[in-house]
Image 1 (cartoon, one colour):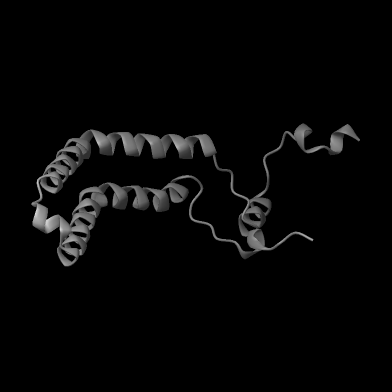
Image 2 (image 1 turned 180 degrees about the vertical axis):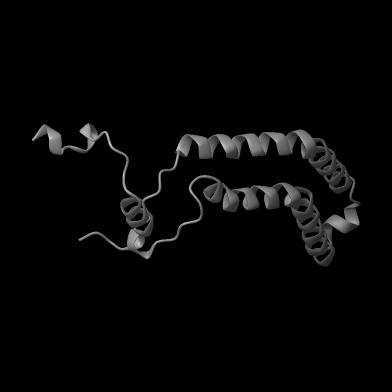
Length: 125
């Protein structure tokens, strides 16, 4: 009986078993490595882009704290200012966000290749 358990097998799986496992969406992946790559990517990006993002946000805040009274109490101007500040803020963090999204798409390919299996998405009965 002990010989039938999966932990006692000493031989490598055959090519057919590996292919069948890939078709089922069973790919060995390390969640820790995935997390490490994400954190390192973010850290390196912040090293290069962080100073520009912070200085841009500071300039944006200084600009908004120096608005005239008339501009603040005019409803139309307030909406336009809000839209402009929102756009400027998004543009400041856009490069960071794009690189992180691209890395989120590339990471699975680095660890086991891109594998989409409908069988893995089916509910178990």
